[in-house]
Length: 583
Image (tube, rainbow, N blue to C red; front, side, top):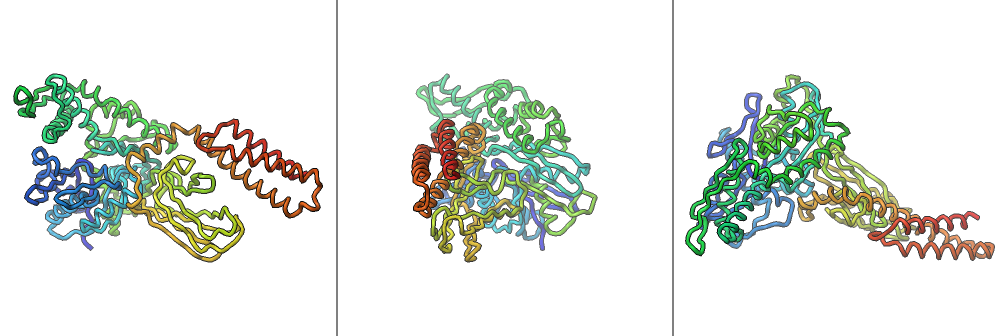
């Protein structure tokens, strides 16, 4: 078996590493740089360019140049060029093919096996899309690993003492924070949180918007719809951001930017670091919520952290580093290269998967890597409730089963509605798959035993199965990229759960009470039917009246608008019927 390469498939730049002489080394791209821009371009003469070559011609060919494709992974986004449609997987595969080619040139050998990293907050759809991209590129993807975990792997094996670290990973398009415990040969993720729509691209965009605003104010020209001008502005914005990571000012010069009413428009502006920090202040503040969430979920205070590791190029921004110090009370560690550590960690894991001892540990022990899932997994149950089978931050791989039953008499099939998110009601979470279990044995409601199993592999990719324990009939589904949950939806899932936690709890309480009340009505009506003839007339009349009263209260409950008063009235009517039935 040949060597396994570790690939950090980034939003802005990608990086590839391999173990050489027991240590992870970075494989240079065809330009000699340690990273390859994640850019793909199609020239008008049919040539396909990857990396720096694609980036160099972006200004003159903006409509046929694709960057930041990672933000579209697991979505229905596509682009049509020269009559051919390209999906995110296929564009990403082109980048992976270039990295594979660079690795084969470096090693002077063919490469087929790889470990590829993804943001910790990628859902199973996005992970599957990444794995599919690897397969399209001709790679056998041995493992999908979370980027912060990979960074900790790179760091942890070279710092053998037991410790808890925070990985603050702000890349080109995504932000992740993970709390990780490192021990003897064990790297365990305690909690993860993040924002899949926050990264260096957003910082660049703020500078671009500032430039466009300055030209509009001074020249009266709107450049936002000028593709060629915007391509140059975007490039200049990124360069200015990098300059301001070390300097106090950045000079932005763009001669011959566009044609105005009075001739050519030339841009010559000075952007100060203080003005830049004003432009991006809210973006930096957005990182605080996931940091606090991860610490809370891990059950530790920031004072319990031994190290804070900065990963991703955007952590070079001084105001980002300042925010990390404010949030954790610690000076971020500078022991790792933020651009290279993720790929190196993936190479370490790949080497371990070959059966080799963990490099750099000196222990000779087998490496145990315990990662987690970012969002809870549920199925919809009666009343529209999202019943969680796997909680977020559960360690993977994992398998969990729960037995459910039918809700109607003689039901022959059930719909398994798979959800992802933190909200108690199904409609407020993201649907990631549906399938039917057919051929259930005819029986009264509540009799059939339907076992639903969630099986999450080490890549965080989900398989759901349902089995009728009486007949043995079984149906399953592996969630694929046909059902998607976008980056925005994941971010919204956590935000909504926090914002609407009060009303969510109310609706869940109402749904459960409504289900119990309806079951009680059915039970009492059956009792009247079966024993009505020998029943005391006064009691029978009272039971009928109380059944009608409870049914009326049930019909008033609308889960999306329910109030505490309605819940109290329903509970009171239910208790009255219970008392009447017990007499």
